[in-house]
Length: 154
Image (cartoon, rainbow, N blue to C red; front, side, top):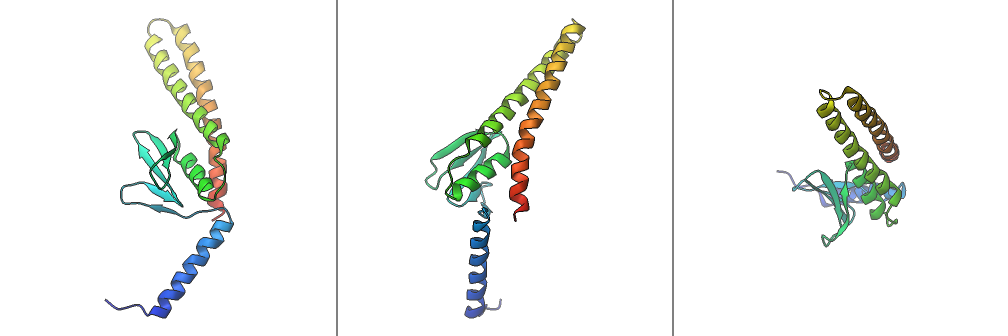
């Protein structure tokens, strides 16, 4: 294996540092994927446990927990890594997304169980499931629009 000249290494190191600083000025902290599957954004780590995402600080103290969408976790961790306050609006939209997902599943399951006994009740539950699905998609679209703004900035 050939050795990289020290001067070339220093130039690449300097360029990488400049790129990181430029991205930070644009509001982006470069995420790093860890061997254990977690993602580090600045001093914060995003961990997936079961179906939820958690953000912990460098001492593994939980900052947020029970995040439904990975995009929400990325946005919140990025804002924290930039030194900004926690975005409660994002977390609330993610929470509403989770509730509406649960409602949709619950109403759909109820409609299926009532289909043979009472078609009228089943129709009501299917309508409720449809409303919950639309609301769920709305909350997800709010989060995704902010996530896409972050992605386009790179």
